Length: 369
Image 1 (cartoon, rainbow, N blue to C red):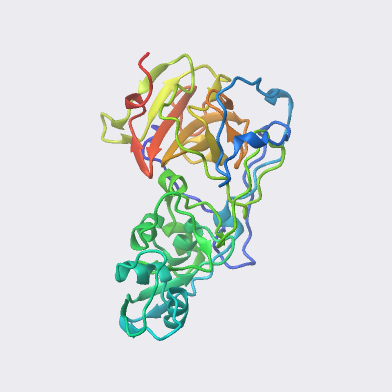
Image 2 (image 1 turned 60 degrees about the horizontal axis):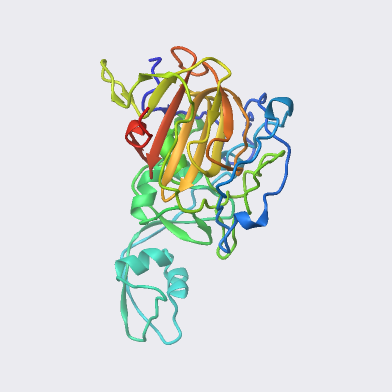
């Protein structure tokens, strides 16, 4: 099916496979501008990117080449499915106990115990208090492991891990945390694991591709211009609050495919805009690039940008990518050049907006033309 509908990215990469398996890195061949650190006034004390609303010239991206992107975190950091299974039980709090200490003792997640007992921060315990310990499989998150990598290792969906652990935006995992692994049976062979692993754009939009960092560590500040790919095991900066409005990613072109179900029943999670090859594709709002790839099944060249407050924009069928993961971008900045890559019916742009993992009709959020 050539239409770009409900795109499911079947990645046959060797990520999350024990060390020793081969991995073929993503294709090279796109460009990004030279590095320059962003002015310090673009960040708040929590390292959230806060773009300023002032015009700046764009870098001469057509004349600068860059190395290929680093492999995604779910490839770079393999996950061993060594979850500890515990049974549901009751624990009587002793003097000096802390929630984290109790969790380590029983092998469950501290956050899961808090949820099961309606505990609120700062999670103060009192001697003699009886805590319900929820049973299940608990995986200890190691530094660099991503939600997608963990989900693949256990043969479950990242969305189900989010639900089982009541994770909220930005869905960031912390190293040292134990998370509940819901249901699922891990495929035994490499071929079975590859066949079972499917990832959609919603997994990336909900933080599934971001590596876990130790508690208390912060993501680095996002540079407005970068030359080298951000390391796979380095998380991206958290975008600031969403500005409240999106703008068209291209100034011309007709919408040739709309959001929703098509005539033959296939579903389009965005809109397709017919434009000439080489048309600059612009960021629909301020944000931080969370994912780029040059050969995504169905979508070809792809850029995803996080905007804060749960919003993510997606730009597909690009012929050339001009930004890198972790780069801060401003509304109207060129992200890529249009093309006919992937399953494009013609030279076009596939454009999506997502709130959390759910696709939203872009025409309901874009200004009327």
